[in-house]
Amino acid sequence: MRHIIIICFTLFSLSNIQSQQVQLIQFSGMILDADSLDPIPFSQVIVKNTSRGTSADYFGFFSFVAQKGDTILFSSLGYKPQHYIIPDSLEKNLYSIIQVLQKDTIELDPITVYPWPSKEEFKQAFLNLRLPSTDYQRAMQNLEQARIKAKFQGIQMDAVANYKYTMNQYQTRLYNSGMYPINNLLNPFAWAKFIDEWKKGTYKKKKGP
Image (cartoon, rainbow, N blue to C red; front, side, top):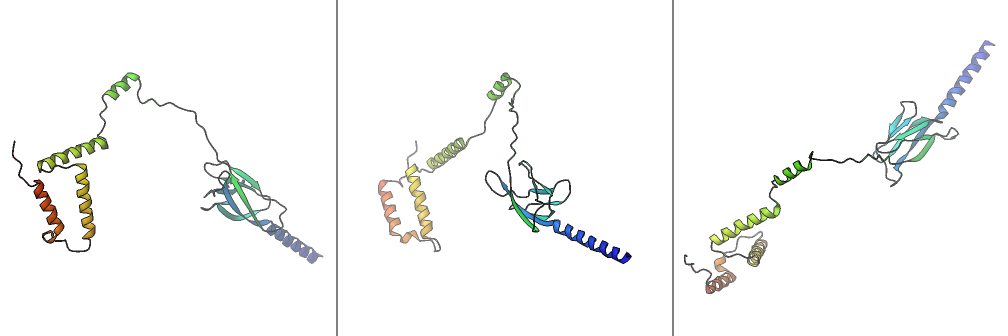
């Protein structure tokens, strides 16, 4: 009789253990933004009132072992927390869901920032303000220096001539790329330009004042 009791107790224990093992499931899913349906990376997935759980990956995917009937809490910074109860009537040990989270918008009371205690102090600071040079002012200063230098060298530069000279130099560099520089003593175009400039009197020495 004693052996029969021991055998029955052992069978009951094994059945109880097996039933408990069946309660464990692989719980997985995706966590998405309710508005855009974009994945919410690194969200927290925790079983309520326990320390069991996991974190979603960069693509919002999570997976861990849970039990039937567990209450799962989903949370992420900037979103309202949500909970989900795993059904206790599942027949399989695999269960997946798609959980969406609503954005948690926090509205703060408006404030007005006054940089100066009074209008009089603001007016005084505004009148004494010395703004730094703007890009336009620096450009005008550079152009003034270029104009003085050009005049000192006896070259009258304008926008059209400067553009033609720059494009000519640019085309020359492209043409001579990968080759030895061309000797202008044998360049008929250079000689034609020299003769034309000489006829115009460009190289005449200017008389002093």
